[in-house]
Image (cartoon, rainbow, N blue to C red; front, top):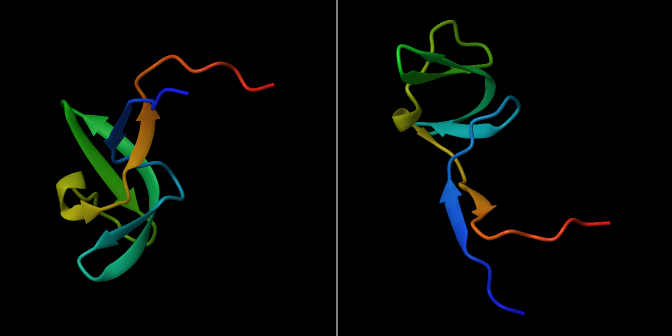
Length: 69
């Protein structure tokens, strides 16, 4: 079988664990305002810019994959 091509990118979704500095936080929700992505964390009132967060990237297939039965 051929090796599949992947694209790795951060995926900020509710419940995802991220690192803000040295603390581990949980994503509450994500908002796009005026072409800017802002991430809200559980227990924080103000949003955080995604560039300040560290998250394990998610792999996406770049080739068509057969459906799993």
